[in-house]
Amino acid sequence: MKWHFENGQPIYLQIVSQMKMAVIRGQYPPGSRIPSVRDLAMEAGVNPNTVQRALSVLEDEQLIVTQRTAGKSITEDNERILALRRSTSKEILDECITRLEAIGLTHDEIAASISAYIKNGKDTTNEQNHLP
Amino acid sequence: MNRITCHDLTKKYGSKTALDHLNLSLESGKIVGLLGPNGSGKTTLIKLACRLLQPTSGEILINGQKPGKASKASIAYLPDRDFLPDYMRVSQLISYYADFFRDFDQERAHNLLSSLDIDEKMQLKRLSKGNREKTQLVLTMSRQAEIYILDEPIAGVDPAARDFILRTIIGNYEKNALVLISTHLIADVEPLLDEILFLKTGKIVLSGNAEEIRTEHGMSIDQLFREEFEC
Image (cartoon, rainbow over all chains, first blue to last red; front, side, top):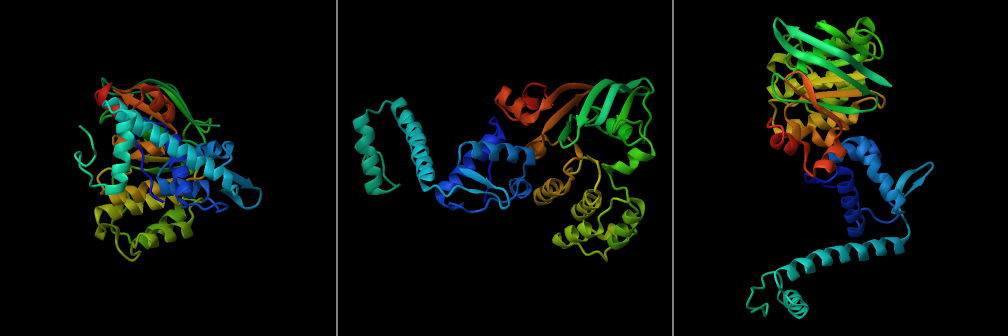
């Protein structure tokens, strides 16, 4: 998978969130094996200890499991993955709504522009958005 | 285990102080970035570790001992300039390394070179600059050493070669080894580092865990040095 790192935030946390996105997108299906720490580190171009730290966070959150013989793999617990999908979509919505509120939109206006956006696609202009 | 330890390590060139009472210890299993602007003492520290220079005062210890025959066998050192006889073919350099270093893994060297499409029949001087630097790195990283010291391994090569070099380092160092990478190109090596050691005019201005420093200052180490240390 493709990795991209931003400044200012610990790299292990960025690995955690990018791995989560890969699980939600199905790039790592339930039960699939995760590459070794060294291989992941090479792929992402980061320190193996940093990858190790990210994987233990994901293990604490029960998204990945360690089999004694087969290394690490994604959980087969679909409910856990659905819960991750829900919490991630809520985080994205939180951020989006907060920013729209910050530029003065009411909840009705936000709801109207979201449905207009979905109906008309990404090219929706402001007029079509029903905004004053 | 401490791989490199310095006690009040000082090196003067005439009246100019290159390293000023340096105290540090670097552990096994870590990738450490030796950072700092040109002329800050990075290469002097490396040459003292490799016993190419003698301290003016203080001491440097490699695996707890003064640099000597044993430390030279345990350090895989990549100098910051061309250092191999350039009339030799790549295949000859592989046997040359195998003769010199007991820990040299010939098979690893062949595999890395073929993944790079470097023709082993070529003379070193006929290779492009990027391929010459990659060949030198491959020879260094094909040793199963306790300490890898890489002096400016990515200076002067294109971004794709840089990427290959960094991945080769990550993929090939021994698990309990110390990797010391010196560079002034902080942004490129930053994701690789466990710890940093930042030198300026022969003194340590900042050292510690890379992730903690990023978290504490809320910016990359590269930004931190541009903004706060103006280098």
